[in-house]
Length: 528
Image (cartoon, rainbow, N blue to C red; front, side, top):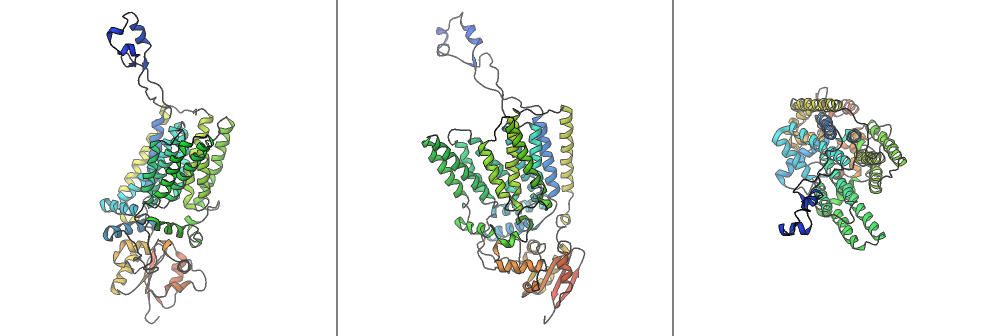
């Protein structure tokens, strides 16, 4: 955001040497003339385009309202973060899987351990409501920083509102309670620092703040690979650019910055071993073929509709800006293209392109229009801000009245309780749960740790184990029930996995001991 100039005031200007020397050097006749032309010592900041803070407040209200509503439900990741955070506080940083039957004893690099500890601590302080509020604030902060970055680059406030809202729509399917919520402000900070540095002839001291941000991010969520990758690419880009201009003295600083950014990824309690955790995720066919957010985006998938709508919108905006004489910022364009390529690898990566793509579109359009945009009347801005602020307050009120049962409404809570009671009667019994039951059971009933078959940590399990488990979940193939060998209790969600639940009700050798509209529990019959 560009700023204006403060008008000089008498007695606050800069004076020539003969004037500062004292009264002896001042001509009593010429002195008034010199005072009249004195240069100002300070420069003031203009208030910015009309309605800047009204639109920004309206945007924050919209984001907060949307996040507060979407955070009223707990999914796999949330239950995993909660039980893992509790486990870490009780037993320390985990090194070995002692949680589940499958892959019991295998190495466990819990890369997002800090996010889990913070999530559990938040729950311990204020329950599910505070946990949901904290997640909503983190996501709102991330997109709020994106909007501030747009405004700082001269984007008119109404367009910053629109493009940030468009970015949020792309991420809407991934903004629930999960460790990923911590990543949004981290990405916005990294982008802002890199783009600000690109305007300087040499690496600015402030740009080194990227490294502590990446180090913190490395202990919060695996998407740090993306942030570190962007920082390394930037360092290489600036080093090549400096070499081309024969500014060789600037090159070592950029190379050191790139090395530090790459090293930040392994600044965790696991050191370089954390790379093994990432390697098990990237390109895992068992995940891409069975879990929606790990699959490649498709125009037929409702979760990707906003993503595929944003791509042509960004292209059109860039073309319009270019036609009006504003070439896209080379660095910003390159970062957006990298984020787009990453987005096409998995649905869960779409939101990262939303940051880069919306920023590129807004920036290019703003420069093509010289920062001009149609203005709305002050009354209109106030009405929009007031309505959205009211919506945010109402959403906060709804969250405050949300019960624990509502937060757990996506899981078969009662069936999980029944399965835990059966397990307590038979300490040697093992429990096989579907994805909506297993991880939630580990959180709700800590005594079942070490006895539940699978949980949300899909990276821990071998390809054969995942194949057998998902064949069971989707009732796929004639040997779909082979994974049940060695288990005495099965719990499944009738609401989320109706096909599995219906088939389990007819499974020979098993007896249904509990059934309600959300789930069912089976126990192996004697001799089966």
